Image (cartoon, rainbow, N blue to C red; front, side, top):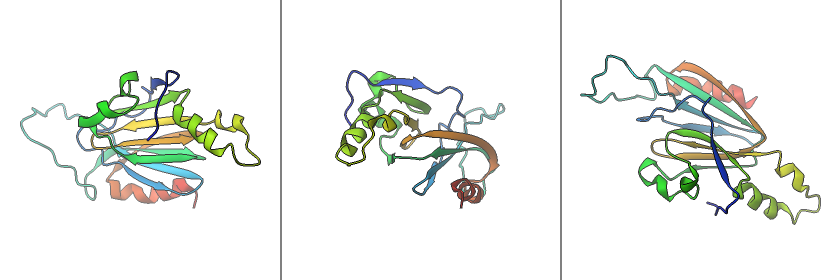
Length: 172
């Protein structure tokens, strides 16, 4: 993880598909040029009365799914915190919250990566400022990526069924 300073600013990306608040089942596939993130999108059944729990099966469920392609990733991490421990994230006091997508302006993580790379004999600090720090906060996990840009598409099916599309998004 990284430490933040007074410069980090959290901006919520409201145009991204809302992840399921119950079972987004995020899945990541990556190589050196791209990271692909897929997750189940929140879809409320208007007839649901809240009295039972709907179990999502990653193999057979038919769900709306977002597939996000992060182009030219420099670094990414996937894991804690979950929604119950989210206040422990270093950006939580800046507006980062569970179940959302965010861009971090003036990212401490990008600045730290730039400083780490500064020992390289062909270091160009300006290349780091063309990158963006993105955060996707899910129910049980958080995904963060520093990349050049990203694309998002939506589809429908099971998480298992979108794996071939994720491979295709890698450009293989």
